[in-house]
Length: 168
Image 1 (tube, rainbow, N blue to C red):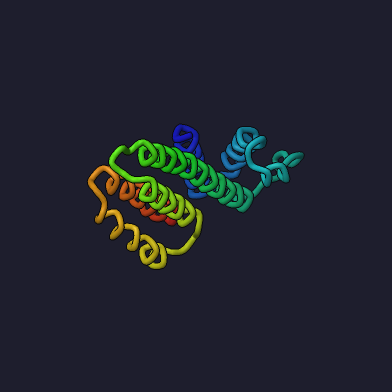
Image 2: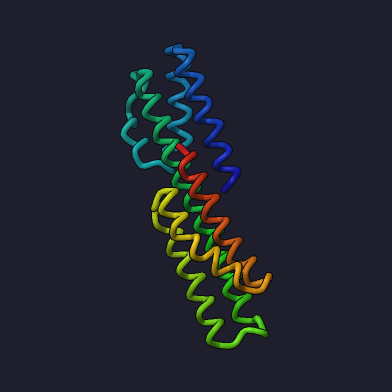
C-alpha cells in the first residue's frame, strides 16, 4: 500500500509541475496517461472518457484533486488495517496475560475497544486529546507491559490524526 501511495505522490507532483509549466501539449499527454492509469481505481475519472485532445489546465487541476482524495482514502484504509492489527494483538496479549484476573482482562479489553472506536471518529485535535487523556492516565496505572500496549494504540491514533490532517 505504501508503494501505491508513493506512486500517487509522484503523479500529484507531476500534475503540479504540468500546471506550473502550463504547456498545453504536455498537459494533454499527462492527462491521458493519468486517466489511463487511474481509470479503474477512481470513479470520477471515468467522466473524462471519450474526451481526447480536448482538455484544459482546469481538467488537470480537477484530476489532481481526485488523486489527492484517492491518496487520502488509501491512507485511511491502511491506517485502519494497521490499527486493527495493533488492537487485535493487544487484546490477544491481554487475554494471555497470566497475572491479570478475569475481571481486569475484561475491563482492559473494553478499554482497547473504546480506543478503537475513538479512532474511527473525526473529533479534531483538541477533542481527541480530551478523549485520550483519560486512557493515558489509565495506562500509567498499569504495569509496564499492559501500559505500553495501551500507549502504543494511543500514540498510533494521535499520529494518524496528525497525518490525516496533513494528507490533502
